[in-house]
Amino acid sequence: MEVIFLGTGTSQGVPMIACDCAVCTSKDPRNQRTRASIHVVMDGLHIQVDAAPEFRLQCLREKITWVDLFILTHGHADHVAGMDDLRRFCDLHGGTALTIYTTEEGMGRVLSIYPYAIMERPIVKGYAAFKLQAMPEVLDLPQGTITSTLLPHGGVNTLGLIFVERSSGRKLVYYTDCKRVPREAVALARGADVVVLDGLRPQPHPSHMTIDEAVAVAQEIGAPASYLTHLTHLSDHGETDRQLPSGISLAYDGLRLSV
Image (cartoon, rainbow, N blue to C red; front, side, top):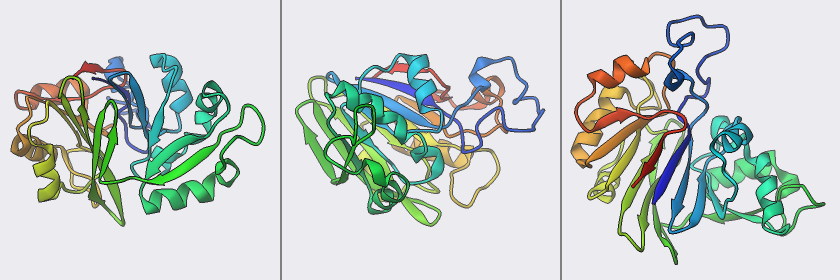
């Protein structure tokens, strides 16, 4: 299984508009953060999780040429705003709708933003078409399973995702955009090879975990490797990474992991 971090930034991105702080002006490419999403390849199945406003540019940068299915963790703008660019993958599928798995809240957001795309086939060649599906607790596929669990994120719940590849048994956990990780989500994550957690910033936030809170969850889960994502400009990559416990790192745009 492979995971590609297309973006690791928060809703404002880094560099942030009209900011000349040390991180926003840094020459370290790991401090250049587009909005958070990942691309998972599980036994050849290409799964895109979320579509940031920069989704098209992320796909070009990372040479993403195929998407089999799409999972929207929740309907906030930094995760849903790039979905129109999925139109190219509809073309590559021969002009058929792309299946979108999400929550009830996520479906409502997609319906309100992309009403023209909710159909079995695109209106004309080159348009997007989405087939909306409620994300089940366990999505059982020939290539493996994707288990979902709800995570609290302000006024909404976001999908936490656990990928288990059938051929290798390898396990990836992706818990972005959450204020805490409930006990049942911690239990589902145990035994993971890689865990990815929301670690917004050092300071408290009403709907995201701080870096210290994310570190505590990572240590409770106990995976060999954990990565923090959805990062603001308040964390310099090199400086913050050096201060993290062994086995816990900051993710960065373009990071590729073989799980």
